[in-house]
Amino acid sequence: MTTASRTARHPSTLATLWRSTVGKKAVMAVSGLAMLLYLVAHMLGNLKVFFGPDDINGYAAWLRTIGRPFLGHEWFLWIARVGLLAAVGLHGVAAFQLSRRDLAARPSKYAHQRRRASYATRTMRWGGVILALFIVWHILDLTTLTVNPAAEHGRPYQNIVASFGNWYSCVIYIVAMLAVGLHVRHGFWSAAQTLGANSARRDRVLKLTANGLALLLTAGFLSVPVAVMTGVVK
Image (cartoon, rainbow, N blue to C red; front, top):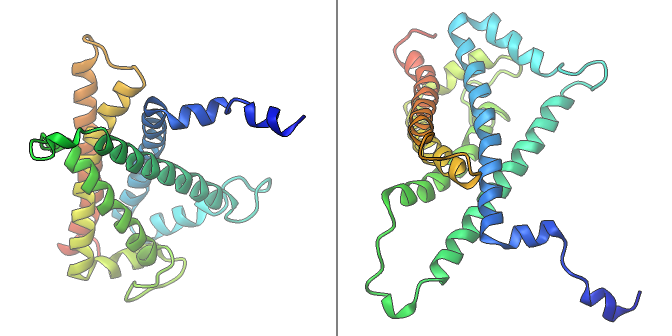
């Protein structure tokens, strides 16, 4: 094959899809739904803290053995982490590029007459930034235990209590979880529209589902630091 013929080749379907606005929105929707499933599973796991240290510590140990003997120790966790990282990366890059594309499409002569971004749009943009920063903090706090004041490897119950025993950890976590709730509320609805799941008949159900998921996740995640602060979990 000559150089000219290789140059003349059309880009792949995936490349064409990624370059399009519709494709980027689809990537955001699919990656967002993947992250939503992770959040639901993560929240349910966190709630095990209410059943005592043996329950949640045993659960954490079990996660490291999923797939054995076919998979090695912690292989499943690393596969899940890589998949989640890919979803977060694709979601963030698509969101950034769509935002830049939206700004570039605005006529310059209307620079002083721009419509203000909707509340939902501003919430999604700033919420995404807050969550990106929180993910870094959360990993350092409860995964690598770098910033946890009383870290004990293999003892997540004790690490959770130690972390939320500090007011600043609670403030960081609460702000982030409120951002999660707002992000899920708008994101779920946007994903349904992008993937064509919405209709005049289903809109009410989808909106109720979005609100319910946002409320459930926010309340579930916030219950843990609140329980530590009030002495229910200690």
